[in-house]
Length: 289
Image 1 (cartoon, rainbow, N blue to C red):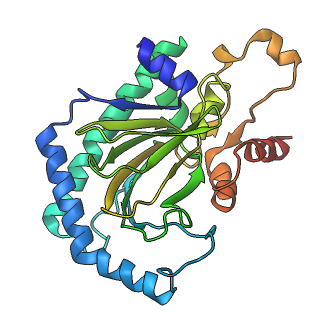
Image 2 (tube, rainbow, N blue to C red):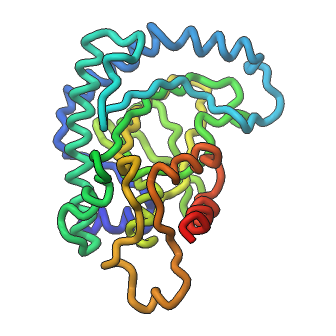
Image 3 (tube, rainbow, N blue to C red):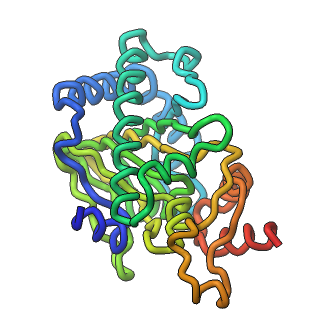
């Protein structure tokens, strides 16, 4: 618990082992995800690179990421059946994976509640809104990049949502977090799930826990797999600092974090993802007043 507390307060990230998801199952997810990329997406990515003339790029590219992705939605309702190009076995496995990650996310939220001195279930309830949380997965592959100094795999950003659970490649690295002004590698660790906190947890904890800036650095060799699942508030959930964590004396001072509807934050985030989070909080405060 002390390690998780330190990670949430000072790093925004931690790697989890003994998380209850069987290693053999993770191997299946990895094998199928890589197979699907090779079969359905690799050629498309190469064609996109060729059409934009990106192999010979000479100057830094700031408006795109060197990644090939697709999205799955699980909650409030699943779209796995509608996503094109997935074979039935892969659909089934990803559905099962989502159910395991959802359970893990809720266990973790309760551990955070315990560390914060909030009642059990507080964070799950804060995320619930009228119809339960939003939960989805971004499946990404970061192909080899000829100019990693000029194109990022994924540009620096904080995550807008709640708690993020990442199953990443255990051989090809690239994920980095920003700590005290330095970019630090989040090393591949076989069968681990990397956890990081989004902006909503920073707001609810009144800044006790931080969402931390991170990026993916493209590599010249090897394709990096990344399966990031986002357990977020429901679109109509009202997000605000937990009263138990807002100290009395702070009430006289300027309130640092706003109160807002999650969907309104997301509308703002879409246009400002690769910029600092503080102006987003300020903008939500302006809406509030």
